[in-house]
Image (cartoon, rainbow, N blue to C red):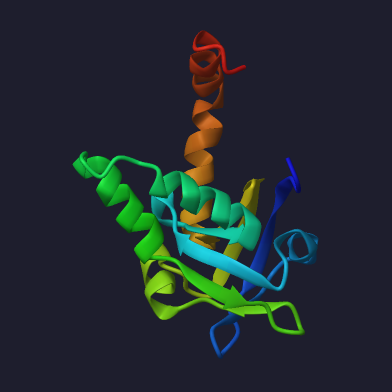
Amino acid sequence: MANLLIGEYLHNLDEKKRISLPKTFRAALGRKVVITRGLDNCLFVYSRSAWEILAKRLQGLSLVQAETRGFSRFMLSGAAEIEVDAAGRILIPEHQRDFAGLKKRVVFAGVSDRVEIWDADRWGNYKRGIDRNAEQMAKKLGQIGAL
């Protein structure tokens, strides 16, 4: 695995709707990132190379099944290539900010090969839920041999 993206960082959207990428993620993601709609109403941020791997996987899915067509459309049509400016900021497109419900306070969460962008309040609610269920999730993963 190239760069392991981990950690959680709270930042604010500025008046021009830009946001600074956490410094720890900038080097790993590069000067151009791909942002797309993610699961659980957050945004997924990929480096260009990680995005190419994911896009290739999506291209390999069957066109026959409605679920695979729909998921490919969800991920690919919602994507945008974004340049990181000299100050380390990105401008998240309005349709993506609306999708994720981003207001002022935003959480960046490193999740292995991607960074997730969450509205801070939504992240807090989601995180409380997964914190409560962590033992159950671990048990299920253990049963299928994933842990």
